[in-house]
Image (tube, rainbow over all chains, first blue to last red; front, top):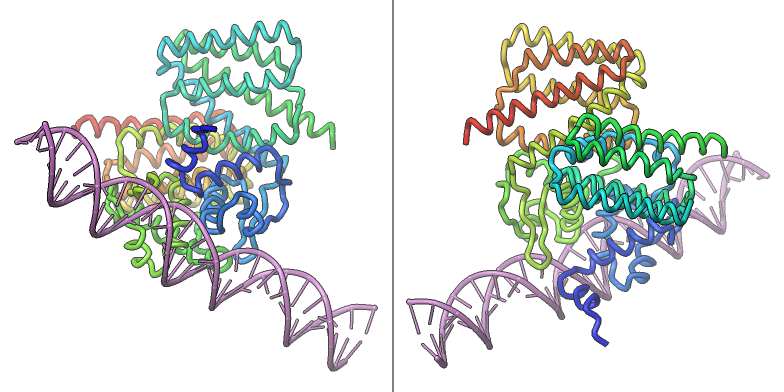
Length: 227
Length: 227
DNA sequence: CCTGGCTACATTGTCGACAATGCCCCGTGT
DNA sequence: ACACGGGGCATTGTCGACAATGTAGCCAGG
């Protein structure tokens, strides 16, 4: 059987890159328990490679704060600390607020219409499915991805999507449902798009910041109740 | 001021970490020409180690965008792109604005008095030295470091100081003087501290954002004139 | 029984050798 | 003269072995 994905794997990717992505995915999805210590030999066997490429992958995961390393002792998978999650939301508020501002200034009209169509699709899904968490979460990521890309600021985009979002996704996978008020979020998304369409950077930033700030407060409330 | 040397005894004993620090410094200071291709063997000899630890260091520098890597071809030192510098200033505006807001809320009174004393010292240096660029730059970093730490948000602090500031410093070293208006900057710093002391997060954020936005516009003006 | 140090083991850190890939140059054909 | 292909060379990617370090368990002494 011809499998182009496998060939690409071998042709234009190094083993270290392949391990990096696979291990990152395993950590984000929780296949490896957060906070657990893992040995290099064990991981190397799991991903069918030697310790050399594995250690290169670990260095990159260390930069993304997905593993913690102490010299001569070993690595442990990042633990899920509530305080760290709250900190991440302050970062998101600042960065995505800026992204919304820049998106209002720099998005092409094609990108704006694409964004509007996305929300229309969400609206219909929402009407049908009432309150399904999964679709809302994926749709939520999709919306935010598009706004971030719309900033046309590559440093900002790479920082948010390439580094911070993996940590956010890890929390979402493992703490699962925060009861994240889908219909309310959809309404906030719509207002943000309206501000972007009106090319009102100030308003777009303010609405995005409130949107993320609300999500943070919602999480804080749930954490306080369940403790 | 942030001083990574304090942790050297415990954290930096491996060869890979030592090379990472040394190579990062060499890149930031411009000892290695930006955009130039460098071979792994050559670098390994330069830092008296083998290619194994060197490659681990390169992976981390790749995460910090200080080197660019293409598989099976090699690495090249990050080039100094004007557009990328402007993008970085938008990141700084968003992140340090948030840092100033959080500093106004979370700084201890000891930290606030330390910050005030720092500016008093700058004021006297300024009065004496009139317009010396170097002290102002170092003092500028010192001021911003303290505000960032004052946010008491470790994710924000590590992101700004551990990742973004190295890129900023690289530009400052190599494009040197932007005529960065020391006395005007000092006045802006003083107003920011006043807002922090008054525990006015909104005002502190606004002033910090204006401060960085002014610096960005100043750079943009100089770039336009010199092209 | 507890404490302190010491020994043995497991794990991480480092290195040199080998394999795989890309690049450059040269030769050949049109 | 130029385009295309093949071979040699330099560089990167990978691997297994060895050295260095931390840890746990044991033994001796109090």
